[in-house]
Length: 313
Image (cartoon, rainbow, N blue to C red; front, side):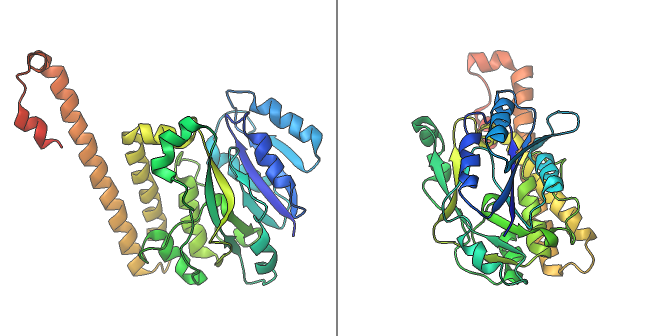
């Protein structure tokens, strides 16, 4: 196997060396492609030193050396990849020693186009653990049992009940299979959830097989500067991002010839539900903002309408 590992790098000077070292432990990893995305810290300098130390590490930036987001960075990495297989890693995550155990066996079968596994959680600091333990705990992110490839798309959509999830950092893809239908690879206008949208399309077009599901093959690194921190602390942004995700999925499904009717109806329902929820949320906080502006005196005097306030929640 010749595996290209693609790592988008942004604001990760503290973590990128560990991510790279976790890749270098595998003989199967043919190259590690770092795509530096105009980090505000010293990540570029750290990447340059990593390149100097090992010829398997390659460094790229966008043509304008600007910041384009994780999706665009992964796309650039895919363009530059020369291995037979593609794997992904985020700069603050890392692989475990069993990362490619299942892949080495499963990819002997030419019908296997992709393999997914389970990921665990590593808290870099006690503060990060206190802040995010309620989100991640010590759970595995995994598909709960082995499913046939044709069921994976429906499972990812939430149509098979308790299916579970897999993460892009525990996914390995046969590069030749990627060229079939997945263009563009990552939707660059989705600044959030572009990997989720990519996994939906991937599981629709390709035959993905379960690898190691009962234990982690990689760890999600959790720290105070995680992107999830910004999403979690800005609920309006998070709500809008889900609307954008499901709108993108709906538009793709509606324009895909012979798309299964049941799956399409499910996607349309999901898109509507997030759209309605987002509209209600914005409308509620719009009313609050308007009330704060137009009736500030009565608020200060404690005379505002209690029943009106209760109706908002």
